[in-house]
Amino acid sequence: MEPPVVLPTRQTVGRPAAPAPALQLTGLTKTFGPVQAVRGIDLTVHPGEVVAFLGPNGAGKTTTIDMMLGLSRPTAGTVEVLGLQPRQAIARGLISAVMQTGGLLKDLTVRETVAYTASLFADTQPVDEVLAHAGITALADRKVGKCSGGEQQRLRFAMALLPDPALLLLDEPTTGMDVEGRRAFWSALRADTDRGRTVLFATHYLEEADQYADRIVLMRRGRIVADGTGAEIKALAAGRTVRFTLEDPDVDALSRLTGVESVEVRGDTVLVHAQDTDAVARHLLTRTAARDLEITARSIEDAFLSLTGDDTEEDLS
Amino acid sequence: MSTASTPVAVDAAARRVPPLGGFNLTVLRIELSRMLRNRRTMFFALVFPAALFFAIGSSTSWRERAGYGNVAAYVMVSMALYGGALIAASGGASVATERALGWSRQLRLTPLNPAVYIAMKAVVALVLGAVAITVVNLVALLQGRAEMPTGRWIACALLALVCTTVFAALGVFVGYLVPGENAMQVLGPGLALLSFLGNVFIPITQGTVLWNVAAWTPMFGVAEVSRAPLTGELPWYAVVNAVVWLAIFVAGAAWRMSRDTARV
Picture 1 (cartoon, rainbow over the protein chains, first blue to last red):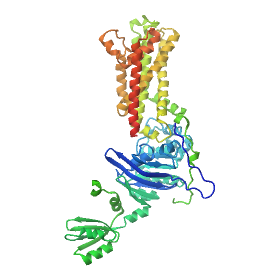
Picture 2 (picture 1 turned 45 degrees about the vertical axis):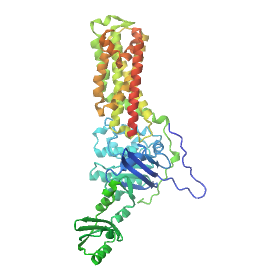
Picture 3 (picture 1 turned 90 degrees about the horizontal axis):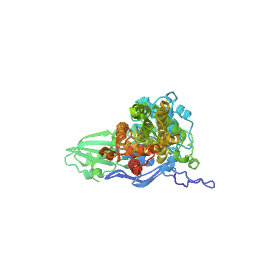
Picture 4 (picture 1 turned 180 degrees about the vertical axis):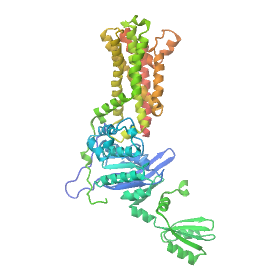
């Protein structure tokens, strides 16, 4: 039923061709009526990368993942997985996903659920092996409805690994898990990705992204606002805040100082966020009547908020 | 990568697509045992029609002639149709329940073609419908009161099975309209009511006001069609009734489903 596809051929002579990206998003856009959920995303993920999709709720992470899986159609733009359309990649077991909640039949046993899913793919690992790998052999004959949240999540993980996918997508995979369960989940995943699987997971925990991803893609209001390693993202947060008192501050002049990210006026109190706060302080003390200077470092959570949080000027656009 | 291991390149060209859109016997086996484990459905589809046959088919008039057989045979065919319809509707409704549970979304992450999923559900519903019809026929056979020529007996059972497809489609449609696991709560009493109206439980005198209303309801046509080999008559309006209701339910199910896949 699938249309025939032309798969990328391998070059055998001369310089080897660059492998197709594991995932390629081009100008990806999705609107629901007047709501712009995803506003033109370009992203290339290379084979073997572990990428965190980081952003607050409503940033468009799930909508983007749905389009990567072919569950919803982009309003504009394209998704390619190893050079294929999402549905073609799914038909070949090249992408799989672990969803947040649901997606299981309570009246099936764990083994039946895995066997059911396995039967739908052309090639899969043996059911018993998959159960053992996910550590749920002991639960095999238990009804899914009687399994705990963590056990159900391990089952979903086992189902996702059945076809040995090249790209694994996880949408908030540890929602509802306790600290122990979370740690066990990530160590299992890490052990798996060490074998070269490409993983993209959505999360709204900066810590989780920093700890488990090679690369963090920061999303905010349907756009990618930052893309880099955990260290690079943290460097964005390296700025500090200068707080001082000054009547009638010249906001424009302050904004023009090198490295100044934002200027906030609260009555007579002014807050300047900047990379080089020494320069700001020098300017304030030599050129203005500023007093009560205070310089504080921004926490990583503050940085995350400043990168992903709402600001009103964007709301009006 | 944090370790020195070299990433294993996945050869996309070596990956195969499953044949027949994912149609396979493992799913059929699991789906069948799932339905058989559901005690409530089994009671209403297997035990209840057989019990009704005993209750109604044992009324004083059971010996009276009806077409090529007797009244007991007439009641038997009606009850078999009712049992089969109920199980087919229940199978259809499970499609919608699985959507509410997110299972259909999970299946969209596999190569399974949505049309093949429906086809497999239909096969399961037909097999179980056949079981329900066989149970009532066996009970009647063992009881020994029902009488009709063997060939007509078999024809009635097969026609009843074909007619259950109308209710499989109704099950899917209602399953989509009624959220979650409540579909059977609507379908159970609903089918009982339709059976009363459709001349399945109690004979309605032809020409009365009630009969004129009944002739428009969805059980009426298929009941006449199923009993045609026994009664020896097949009114044109019964055939039209069966075909039109099948078309309405299939169209309704297809309409809801296409809306659904647009969302998941």
